[in-house]
Length: 84
Image (cartoon, rainbow, N blue to C red; front, side):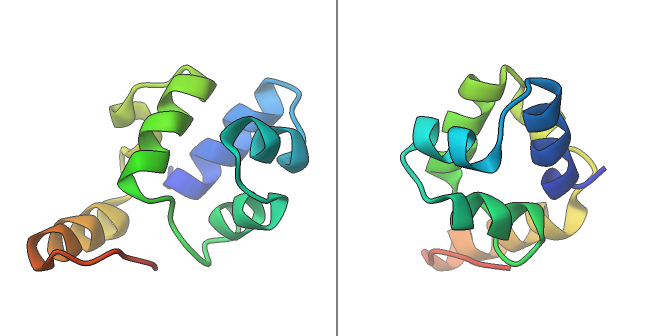
């Protein structure tokens, strides 16, 4: 499962709307929508916040999303912020 589906499924399991999750993470609901619709990825700092808030390990959150993991790795090596 991809990170997008992991975020959406866990959010729904917790009975949260995109707006509620966004408020708790101090981002906009459009940001949550963007993550869940595969337009962008959360940055590393936000992955940590998501992990804590959704009570998931990072492994559970990003597991099987090889494309995202490779993208993070390449951009971290280049010292860049990244988007999908």
